[in-house]
Amino acid sequence: MGKTLAEKIISRKIQKECSAGDYVVTPVDLILAHEGTGPLAVDQFTALGKNEAATTGLFFSDHAAPAPRKELADVQRRLREFSRDTGTVFHRPGTGICHQLVAEEWAAPGQIVVGADSHTCSAGALGAFGTGMGSTDVGVALAFGETWLRVPETIQVLYTGSLPPGVFAKDLILETIGRLGADGAIYQALEFGGEVVSGLDMESRITLANMAVEAGAKAGLCAADSTTAAYLADQNREDAYLALAPDPDAVYSQTLKIDAGDLSPRVAVPHFVDNVHPVEEVERVSIDQVFLGTCTNGRLSDLRVAAKLLRGREIPGDMRLLIGPASQRVYQEAIKEGLIDIFLDAGGVILPPGCGPCVGVHQGVLADGERCLSTMNRNFQGRMGNPQGEIYLASPATAAATALTGKITDPREFLR
Image 1 (cartoon, rainbow, N blue to C red):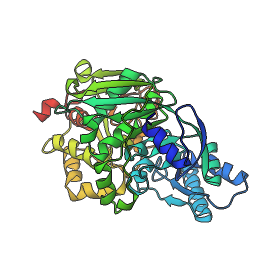
Image 2 (cartoon, helix red, strand yellow):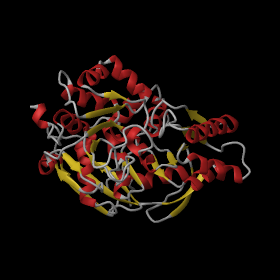
Image 3 (cartoon, rainbow, N blue to C red):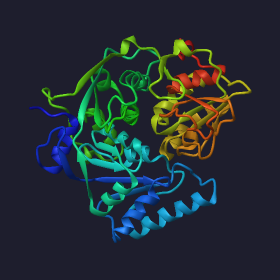
């Protein structure tokens, strides 16, 4: 019997054949945590009497960077000192979002990546089995270099046809979550395939994998192919490449087929990610703030798409446009390409590389009754720091078009 990507990666790692439903103990290649989840992981690690990490541990200061208050500054200092003492790696504030940096510097096909953050599944875009866990489990994994897993069943998601103008990976994954529901893939893997995925660049694949958890998935996976190899080579990590693909006779719990050619831009409306509508149904809803960024859509290709629409144009005086590059590398490339100048000329505000407004800790908190259209991955009530605000989710193209009009706008109006 053939294997899915999840079964293949885990079987290879434990050097033993396994199938969906099996319980296994597996070595872990990468472990990550940030200032929101790291302290509990550190506490567990310390309680176990350990003083040296058993595998590669990565700590980040990205959810509140730079620190907006002393308590968070204290936490960041604690993680910095812990990393120095245990041989783990600390990424200082301003270097970028953990999931983006893991993709840029660390993740590779065939790895097992666990993190104290639900969007650790982003690593699946590179053919790694990335999954979020609680801080206690992450602390234990850091101490012993392994963790236990139930090998998940897999939902195969096939995107056929070709993407129409104005439709992007974000629209694909929003449509997928809308069809599956927020609990439609609980403790399953989403395996993304079809000719559309084969043609997507790595940054778009990361968008798909990043939001797999919004359907309840344990992991979101793409095959490792020539696109993966080129992405790793661009980072001088070509030796980390490993070709990985599901077997033709792999067994799936279900197959979801989506004809990309039938899609228009999608928008998730408050307060649930699976409350997805075609942009045509929600056009003209007034928006107070647009946020372009996060681990879902803060990469260079996302900024390019938005800049294409914003070039030579200016946002209304009562609109706030916030741009948060996902990493320092993205920020630097955006400067070189002139994208930052385009955003500033349009009236935008550039934020430090990091999560920014996404978690509502600082930067971009909404006033009572305000609405934000964001490229982030969640629109739960209060997510951006105010339960009285509303969050709409869309692609960078839809975000840019909306910033220009002050209401939810189909980006195809500008692309024409």
